Image 1 (tube, rainbow, N blue to C red):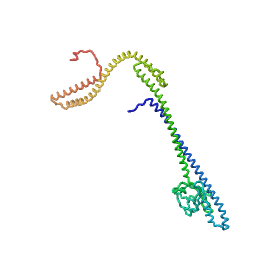
Image 2: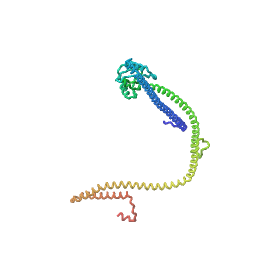
Image 3: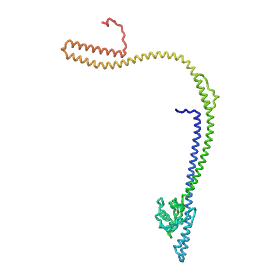
Image 4: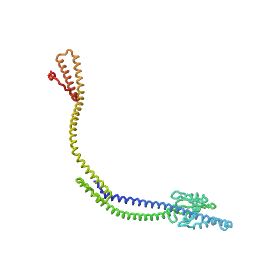
Length: 404
């Protein structure tokens, strides 16, 4: 069974909708805007971090290359004086490079053009090994990409995955490579870009706490506004019920009494307007009832006269309708009977021609058939004339003459 809703409930329900929808929209908009800003901020932080790290490792590599160039010039003097061998001097330079650190985990590594690791102080087990075909988990041939990067005299960046010195699992890394063509060395420094993910994760956690606080604020605001709207809706509901009860009582009395609504007892302007229209309607109804009473008696006389005329016309229509039906029936019957009568008449005529020497009994029966056929045709003609409703031609005549 469908539950009936009162106007007061509908009013309260609509007020709640008017409260909930804006709050939900504002909440969704605020939270979504916060996420959008966080996403944009995270993107900017990531880009700034990566650009800063790339600048840092590029500067570190350039410093090392300048150091190597300086040491290389000194080596040439030592070599000319034959104080120390070139290999020993290069190894001494590599050891100095291996001790260089920057940032949190930054270090310098050196690889020859043909893929032999010359220095990697954090992974010394690779020193002296040819890792030309070494691939990272994504299939990137790291040393070959480094070789391509040093083809640029200014150096270039490469992206790959590599193990951190203190961890066994690989992490995404960006390295800057620059070549020393005179010694066939590739000087590189790199940074692990997943460190920014930790910073972003921390910011995301802070964002979650901020959203919880915002939701809590919206919750308190919703409870406060719900209580406020409930009080307002209750007051209006009482006024509405009072006005509706007044109208209900009025309509019950208006069925048997000529009364009007007291507008001064209504508080809501819309109900006052409705009461004015209802009072005007009552006045018009009373006026109409008086006019109706005046015409009622006269109308009854007219109806009586008209009813008698209609009854007479109705009787005439019934008679005509019956005659019409009888005419249709007679026409159909006459057509259906005259065809076999014609056949029988032709047969009698044919027998009279063929049976010239017939005996008296046959002649008597054929004559009897002919008379009966003519009698039947006369009866059909009379029936059709009656169904057509032909007017009688009344004339004076002598009954004795007709009998004779």
